Length: 357
Image 1 (cartoon, rainbow, N blue to C red):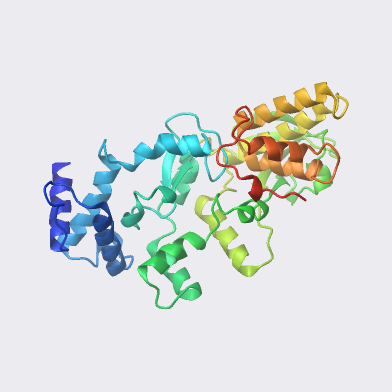
Image 2 (cartoon, helix red, strand yellow):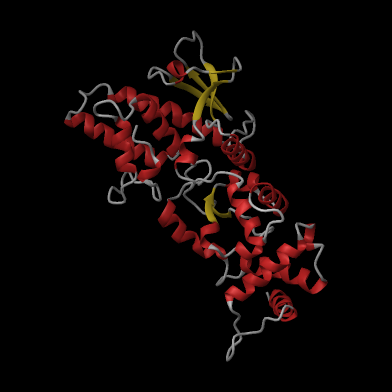
């Protein structure tokens, strides 16, 4: 830690920044300003290769210091993020209820050190999404997007903006919900199941072996392997690019039947089939009756604990849409976004980001 501190102080001094008068602390905005300026000068070179030795050492030390210092590290924001967004991966929706839930930087600290303490640059992530995303978007891809779509040549602020808008994010509002719908894929026969089949309430999970989910699917005589995947829905080329960039950096559809380390598709598929089973069980009650409402509440509790909000909300929307009486989707839209409904509330979910028709 002493080595980091010495390199940071030397780097700040080389860039005209000294400690605040009367003590040995430094102005955070000034430190971030130096990091921003040097990032722009470096222009994406590996290991800060375009910088002078003192500045190269400064950038490396700065990243390590705020990653490891028990008092100052960005990891201290974890509790606040859980309070605001719940114990779910922001990218795939997996519930992660232990220390494996990591703070992930939208603009990665290795590429944009000036943003590594910026709270609005934080998301919670599962190990798989965090690993796939790595140091993406890079400075170079962010610069290229900014030059092509914002300003050429771009300023550093343009580069930051380019890095953020080149893909959709979980907090991109209606774009991220409508723009990335799930679908059910027949792995056995290599085809997409049509909605009438994929959403059939008689579909049932049969087994899960390693990452392979077998299910009895309507219209099939024998169980087949299925996988719930994510696609893009918008026809606008710009939005398609942003959606594809998001899918590519976190690899939401990565599916390896024999690899246990990444079970995102597996668990998403199980969630899909659980929604269908839950709605099938709900049919045992008269719609709108007290028993029906109590069962619906229990389904919403199951959804909160199971995670994969997009699967539950999308299937409710498709099977019991807003335009039908006693719409299950409408009940869920209201309950899951209400912080006063703690048993059903998905923290950080904005009711205005979910469609009403």
